[in-house]
Image (cartoon, rainbow, N blue to C red; front, side, top):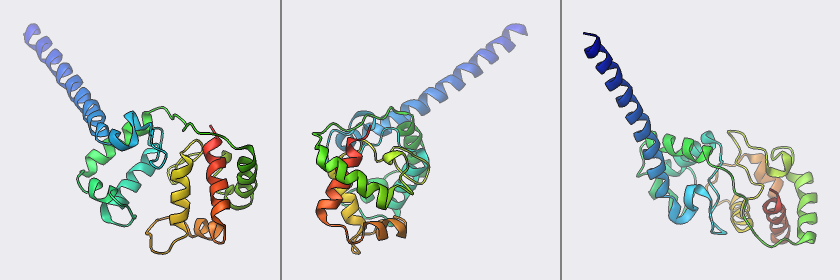
Length: 193
C-alpha cells in the first residue's frame, strides 16, 4: 500500500513537472516564430522592428489583441496575431516580459539627443517617465528602443489614416512637430538605456 501511494505521489509530481516544462517550452517555441523579425527572445536587431524583450505582459497582450481584431494598424502583424489563440498570446506575453531588455545599439548625435530631451520634457514627460524607461501595463518602454521604429510609430500616431490606439494626449503632443523634431525625439529615446 505504501509503495502504491508513494508511486502515485511520484507519478503525480512528474506529471506536474512535465506540464510546467511543456508550458515553458510552448512559450519559448511560440516566441521563436517572432525571432525572424523581432530577434531571439525579443532582442530585435532590425532598426524598424521593435524590441519585445522586457515589455510589460499586459501591454504585449493588449497590443496583440488589437492587431488580431484590426483595431491597431499593421502591415503584417494583424495576420500573424490572428493565427494565435488567446492562451498562446498570454504565454508569449509572459515569456517576453521575463526576458532581459537589451537596448538598441546605434550612433549617437549629442545635438539630436539634446534637442530630443527638450522636446521630451515639453511634450512627453508627463506620461513617458524616466526619459522613456518607465514601464507599466499601459505603456511600453521606449528608452533604448530603435530610433527608426520610434520615428515610424510617432509619424503613424499623427496620421489619421493609421489606426493606432494612442491616447489623444499623445496625438495632441506630437501634432505640429516637424519630421526633424520627431527624429530628435526618437534619437533621444533610443540613446537612453
